[in-house]
Image (cartoon, rainbow, N blue to C red):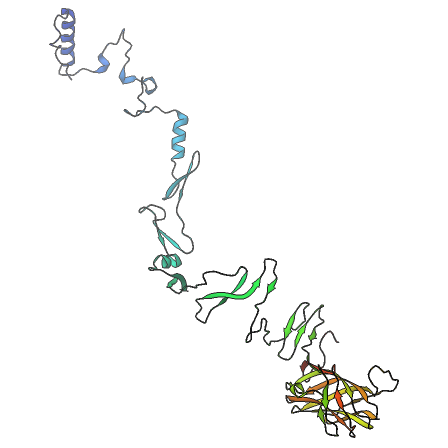
Length: 405
């Protein structure tokens, strides 16, 4: 260790200072070397660096120049506590003022995978998987359709509709391709009211398909089993909705004068066609005027239909219109080919009422007929207002319908 010579640039220095500096130079530069402890600091505020305590240091640099920091015990505890080891490798997370733990990213059960999820071997990397990967891999345009597990394909078939629509109209398919829709003509109002289409000559506004009846009838249910339509107005009280077919004479129809069986109604509508294996209820009223030769009167049923059975009640009397009588004839019959409902009478008018049931075996036609036992002569007429009506109530073996027990 040696000191440099006195500065040459400083001229005019006092000789004493120069001698002192040279003497100091010799002392420091001796072969044994000088130590800092050998210096005399008397009269100086410089203390021995060798014994200088850290807490006695002055002007500790802070900030960014040299970044020398003098920490307090609390600050050291804070730093060492916050940076304590979390116990395992992974992403470091501070959970409180003095606590750190390691974390790792967890992928969901499907849809995403994460490589290097703890960041130890590299940056965590996310990748799509399963259905999401399959969807991302699709190219082109179309509707994405799942065709299997984690498998998707593009369907370029789009469902198209008309350029405009009817408000509240029910949508229906147009054709069998499954790609076009259109208005159905059926409208459900905002209040839930259903308005059926108007229909046409080949299309009914409402048509029920034959189906299986409810095991337990429900109030408000409308059903059709292929033979009859039923409605349940209250609880289990299912009943037939009569689909009544009828014929009514709108103007007097002339009958022949003789003893041959003849249709009660005009030829244009004297025949009703019925279905096989079906039960029918019927009723009729015949208003007849005739000649005054005494004769009996029979009713009968012609046609091609066959019956498992037929039973009906008859009530008749022989009086002119607007004339009451206490004499009438009643009875019941199982006959198809003729039942004498009125005894012999020469009165010019008669009224016959029928009410009963047909159990049809083989379907076909039924022709309501009348036959005079003797030619009444004169003019014989089926008067306007005479009618026959009939409606199905079920299969020809039906025993009951409704809340019977």
